[in-house]
Image (cartoon, rainbow, N blue to C red):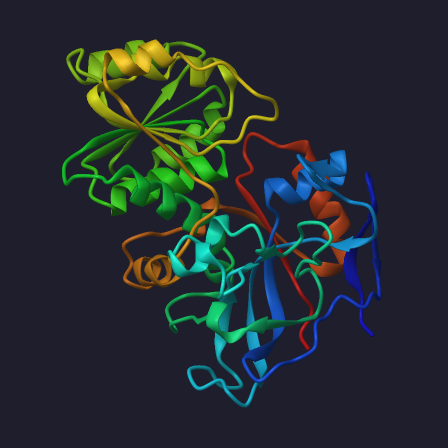
Length: 347
């Protein structure tokens, strides 16, 4: 049995064999994992041992942003074959649940999501996964890009929840990986321009290099002031809150235009105050985002068509043998890092 990246307990990772697989069914495929991105939730489990009610109580394989190659196909699978390059949606819902029937399987209480205790993740040589949540990658989409589909799907979910109208002006507060993904999804969804605010200039430089995106460094200019100047005092049509920071959430009513939309994407660690009267006074529509549903096909199509290029957001790719060092670098949260990926050894 080959090594996996195992979170033994809070603050301790190891590379060792572990039985992390699930048995094949006729509706599954077996995949040799190629590339895995490190997500903020992975880092949070590493440093804190828990996220909300999800607590690491036994060794767990990390990772949920993955691409790879199909090496075995269940007898009932018809849309995939051995040798197909794929990416995998990490959440497996109960197809008979009320949430799944409504098309909102992302909020299915029974969903099993990779690297969410006690479910093992995909930083392991092979995974068995439902074919229904495994997607073929076009030749123009690399393994690295395929592993970026998962975080981009969150941006796609946010853009969808916003109900963007062609020509809208959007603002994204927070230039972390999800903020950047949301900004790109908003552009792809029809926004004429997207402003991104943050206090880390290196991150603003990365996302600001994309056409259609302008940046606001809140160390020098308050976001509300910059948006007022840019819109002649009207405000943004859509505001995506991606920082999870209490001051940003409290200040949302000053950023959106009357009758505009606020989409809550970032997740605060603790409960935060919200200016309800401020939201009411402008009759702002408030939407929330939790992961994504039915977004993988659309995300892959946009990447394959060249409408979205996520490659500039990949800051480093390290071999699996250096995956503990990769996680330690992710913990550093360097201003110049957006997404760190790990490449698995060839099968």
